Length: 448
Image (cartoon, rainbow, N blue to C red; front, side, top):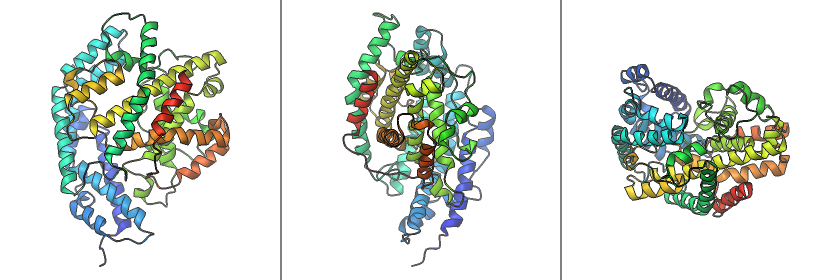
């Protein structure tokens, strides 16, 4: 039986829908953007890219070996665009709950990181909990709706198309990563609290959040964090122009870790910009971009390397080693937070006991109970971020083995990365069972 779906025509429409949806959602942090979004239907003339009929037609299609990758990519896109269409009103409600009012949930979280003292940061965290009631309500509804849509489409989990692995498999990796880094993280937090002379005061999760900023690694960075510095720092690793539209929003410069996050965004953009224009959109971009996240994490690891600190920032060896240690602590806390985020988002409902347990394990102190349901905000690419993290260690070690410890300055490494980046965006390579143990060992060696 011939299938009436024209894959290339559908691919063009998917590109247009993606640009509209994500362009609109990028404006939801402003009142004007939310007002415009309520009267804007990004699917007005593109309904088929986000409909059950198209989804099932693609799933039931028996493509040729040549068409199978594009068909599979379009299945993933039509599914997530369908989710986005049905979720649109709640996405706007979510942004309203986070940003509306003089004292907002968003501003409270920002104050945790920008306050001049830990006491004020801890108060900001408590205030975020007090302001989270409406946010929790909207996010619980969004999660329930996402699960219901997945069930109606015959999927066992909302992230079932992100990887061939079962969600429980990723959860096993996440828990193993936490288990194997618990002692190291506890020791890091203990030493940091001693240096900060906190003493016997009641611990706050805000301390770990602020420690992850790596503010004590402030030497040598440029005055402005932007694309110009990133392009210069990584000039050996991209042999083609970067499409700045693919660069995730750069963070505020709140500490040295902001440069880690910026490097991560730049690596993501390097991977996303590389596929040839002749490649269909659904193959060059994916709603679950594990490969792009892995590039980003690799670029971030480069910034945390003492060699980078010496050669790019011009620091003496002792200072470079000290800053590299602070940035590695930031990456350890980030990795553990990423694992906790997945464990808190993998189920349709997460009980309060699990929320309390994971909060205390990751941040060294419990999060306010009222944040249950509000944190973390679900991200459709959450599984691909965790998947990318689990593959980053072997990815970077391969680069070091091929191109030496300063691989990030080697044009041959850039050529190699570009050859990898020209491949289709979706990545579902196997994960070895010992990966969490190897990640933990890597952190121990760096911080030992």
